[in-house]
Each structure stands twice: as C-alpha cells, then as structure tokens.
Image 1: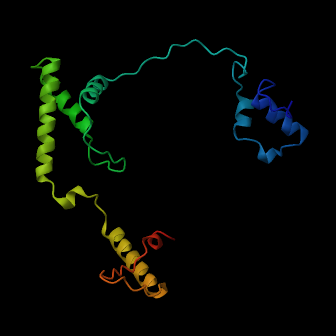
Image 2: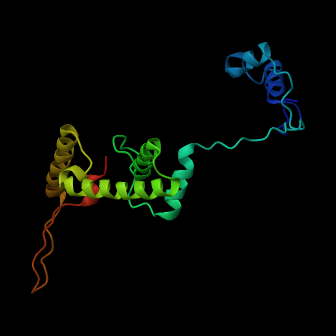
Image 3: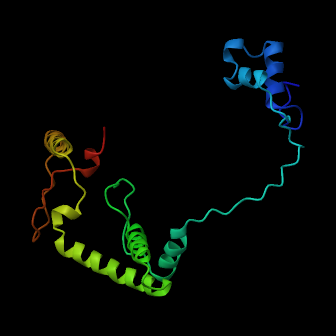
Amino acid sequence: MAQSRLEKIGTIFTRVQGLLRGGAMKPEDKPIWFDVYAAFPPKLEPRFDRPAPEIPVRQIFYAEDVVRAKLHKENRPQETISLFDNRRSTQSQQFVQIYQDLKGQGALDEQRIYETALDLLAEQRQQARLEATPEESLPEQDEESKSQLLSDFKEAVVSQQTTSSPAPPAPKGKKEANVGINIDSLFKD
C-alpha cells in the first residue's frame, strides 16, 4: 500500500505507516503529525470517497462593507496605497470613519449621510494637500539608510572611475557628456 501514489488507495497515515513498517522511512524521519494522529485518530477516516458535509457557507458582511462598496462603485479611488505605510489611513478608511461619525449623530438619512461624508472627505484631502510640504510627501527614511545609500553611491562612483576607460571623443558640434556612472553597477552586490 505504501508503494502506491494513487490517493484512492489508503490514507496518508496508512501510507506512512507502511513505509515505517517496511523500513523505507526511518523512524526519525517520520512526520511530526504521525504520533498525534496515532494517539487521537479522527472519528471518520479522511478518505477520498467520503462525501463532503452539506454545511451552508455563511456570508460575512460588516456594516461598513456596504458603505465601502458604494464608495468604490460610485467614485474612483484617487490614491496609491503603500502596504508598508501603517501610519496613514486609506481614503476608504477615512470615508468609513466620517460616515460612522455622522451616522452616530443620527440626524440625517442614509443618502444624505453618504453625500455629507463625501464632501467632508474631499475637504480633508484638500486641506491635507495644502498643508503637505514636498519633504512630507516623500516616504521618510532614517539617517542610517540615507548615509548607507550615499556611501554606496560614492563607492560606485569611485569604482567606476578607477575601472572605466576614457570615453571616446564626442562628434563635432556636440558637447561631451561625461556621466561616468553606470547605473547597473549600483545594484550589484
């Protein structure tokens, strides 16, 4: 039974058991789950021909899912999302937060809350654009990574200057563009 690769013949437990009995698998190589399965076998053996239980799959929806779906259906997302940035909340997260705050006040109907939340989100984004400086819009890097990048660049320039041969003369009427840095060599380790 252990020699068969057909899943219809035996279970994985009986196959491993046959390999251990036959000496094809050393006892120290047996899987971690083998002893646990032997001590606590399942009530029903996991075979290929056992019918799957007819359990209905429940739909999981949160209250904000409907609002978020409506937002994405009616409005195109106007941002890029960085999965590395955990500090900033996304546009849809901000919208849902505003929507829930307005709904908590309970003074408006659903459509009016949605429209007001859109207006408030647009104001927030406009205000954030006005307050942002060019340095804040770039991802922050610590000083160590900046100095590491700078030193790597300097090393690449020095090594490029020592190993490169002089550039051929430029054609007449054109300025000589002596760049001296090979970008490909920057990324080699």
